[in-house]
Amino acid sequence: MAARRTAIVFGANTEVGKTLCSAALIKAGLRRFGRAAYLKPLQTGVDDDHAGDAALVKRYAAAGLGRCDTLHAWRAYASPHVAARQEGGQIPSDAELARAVSGWMRAGDEPFGVVETAGGCLSPTATGRPQADAYAGLDVPALLVGDARLGGISCSLCAWEALVRRGFDVRSIIFVGDDAALGNAEAVRAVTGLGDGVLSTVAPPPLPEPLGGWLSETAECFDAVCASVL
Ligand SMILES: C[C@@H]1NC(=O)N[C@@H]1CCCCCC(=O)O
Image (cartoon, rainbow, N blue to C red):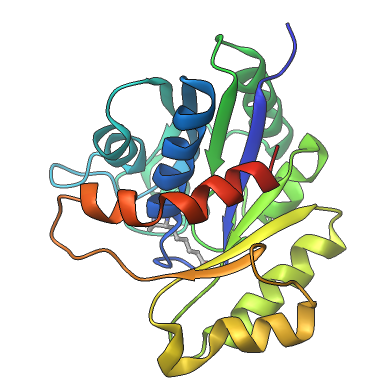
């Protein structure tokens, strides 16, 4: 079976808005194709209060979301290699992880899919090696969620360079934050040469949820991101 069109979402750091952007991209995929799928290959910090990012995406994306999966989840709020070591059990090799993601891309009949990585793009897999290395052979377009906080210019540029160096086709960079204050997108644009429409900033959603308003307000931006990763 042919693989569904899939985008991989990387972060410049943890807590930069990858899950929000993944949900918004899923929504864009639903507007375009009617059905979409989501995968979180590695998830840490799952407990009674947090069922994991797949559960959040399921709630945000609502109707139309097809497969919504997590491959490996650990309870510790830690890097996957630390959580996996602490909690025992079999540690998937990076090759097994990549094969499982690749298999997921071929399973099911949704025409569009989003794979959300954990933490920053060089944050470890369960083996302790960078995720970007594990996923480099998948040959899927990438969305980088930049870090909109103070200090985020450097780690966004480092992430972009790390992805490009590994052969990723980074089609879009999105910042979730108030760029007028810090100028992160502007500084990243100056170095990467990526222009408007490819590199954008969206305001953070009002929290706590619901996110319906934010998902509608950012729809145009994520329609463009979706088009960029097809
Ligand atoms: C805890 C969070 N849960 C999750 O699934 N992703 C985050 C993991 C962040 C790992 C950061 C490792 C590092 O780069 O230092």
